[in-house]
Length: 306
Image (cartoon, rainbow, N blue to C red; front, side, top):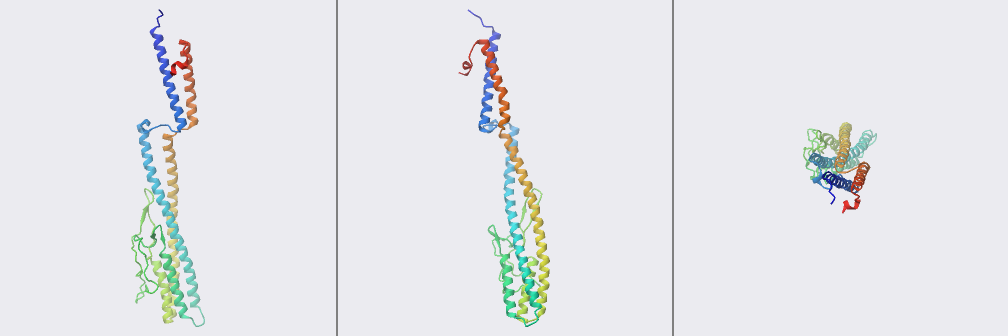
């Protein structure tokens, strides 16, 4: 009877154990390469990595939601700018009309002046009742309220000459939006803004001229329209500044989201090239173990895989 030394048996067992461990490691890497994922389920993720992944996921959800809101606001600011630009076009036409009428050497057709002035008032009103995203742009917080009453037939100039927003149906609570952790943007414009009060009043003075024939009303109309020029320019400047701030925030958010997505992806996804590099020495190690085991016991690899 042949006696196998204990040391030899222990050595064989250690080699078999090493082969099994290496084989399992190879299978794991092969699965990672096949799925493209470092972990096949969350229970495999180390606690620190899992916490980081959860924190990144929560931040990404918050940032992506805010980015969506900020892009909507960027479109809204664009609509404000388009509206003010159109009002500036109306203003140029209005100034030309009042200036031409005021300088007319012959008899002025006051009825035409009255009709055209009403048309200008209605055109201004049309732009200031624009809606966007399901709400009126110039109504303050009352975005579901049509912001302007019958301004064409009811003057906003009081008997003492005071110009008022008596036509306005909205409120003065201008919406703000938290566009970043540190910036709360106050962006809205309401239809009772002084520049719009003056705009309406300018053409009501022109309508007064149509009733009285007094050119002082045309002179006052032209004076107000010149003030409206400065007012609309100031609104455009403010809108441009807000848009610039918002666009910078959006760019930073998009960059931050991309970086955090890459970090989160790196926690659970793998680089196949790196994994193939990691796999090669393990295969060589397994082959070496099989060779040693075979040489020691003349057993076949298949015996270890049964």
